[in-house]
Image 1: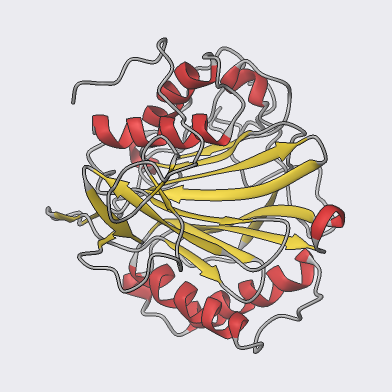
Image 2: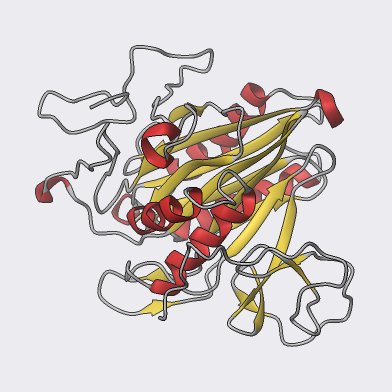
Length: 346
């Protein structure tokens, strides 16, 4: 497979590479060209728990044999970057809100994304729900209170401390409850035009030692990480948006994700989208999302608003909206659906 390392049995393994970086991390080297038909970059594409999926040079997938698959709770998680004429200007994470139990039943309001508001750190998870939900919420609180990472720390030192918290918490976690999960970590070094954005993927396979992968960021706007059971559905919608006149923009990525959620192809993915991000200045940002005529924040419906100014709201087309009228905010740029991208009737 092009850009994907092979195990002896032919199954792709994203956690093994002879080319390790300074953090002992590997880069998957999956080209955005192969996924989107655009300039080379990199894209992590993995459904690491029910079936590990990678793209090959013909945009086909490799799936773990059924005896290697693990029953667990899934999610859909994506990351993309926004690039302007001066370089990378933003990083965004989006996820669904559905939690599904192996024995049956689901709930569409589970939090899957986390931000430190005082410092530039954002996190999301895929796989098991209970452990990462608890520990990631603790981690961002510690970051905001200055207890965990240095304000001027580099990506390596910050990630090392985050992994240490996760690993030590796992040490006391019941062995019988251990499930595999991945943590997507985004940060920024510096401020303004001198800032540098970074993404890392940390994998814990059944509580074993963390495996870290560097996600290299291309010089053009687009998706850089697709994780979870809904990744294949998202990829299909992303192709359509990227081949339209608005391809290579943040709106194309988020709109494709929204279309995939709305279509509901993956039964383990659902509920309203969640959205967080980083800009060149300031800490992590959480955005409200307007979904099917209702307001959602981290997947939870917002019935009333005491203030309109504390959160920026987006609709499924990534337009900036007024949370009271639910319409596009006056003066905000219209971002209509391209004629070539038909809205799915579902």
